[in-house]
Structures are given as structure tokens and as C-alpha cells.
Length: 62
Image (cartoon, rainbow, N blue to C red; front, side):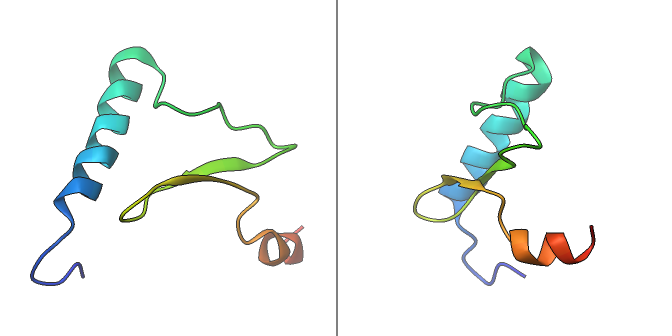
């Protein structure tokens, strides 16, 4: 799924977020709030906070 050269830096960032969350309850970004639906997307080379990703698709299920 990741090909012959998986992005190690991306894996390291995601692993660090999981460890930080497991140890201290804080993965490094704001807590999820249904009014803003902010989530962190992990991507290479940079991660970002996205508000209500795929919101239009989600609204079809409401």
C-alpha cells in the first residue's frame, strides 16, 4: 500500500502523535469539536489541520 519506499518521516510523526496521546492525552492539536470538526491530516511532506474534511459528503448522511 505504501510502495517500496514508505515515508519514514510521516510514520515517525504519526507514531509520535499516538505516543503523546497515550502518555499525556494530548496528540499535539486541538480537541475535536463537532461545531468546527477540526482534524489533523498526516501527509508528506507536511501535516495540516483541516476543518470538516469531506463535509459535503458527511452532510449527505445527516
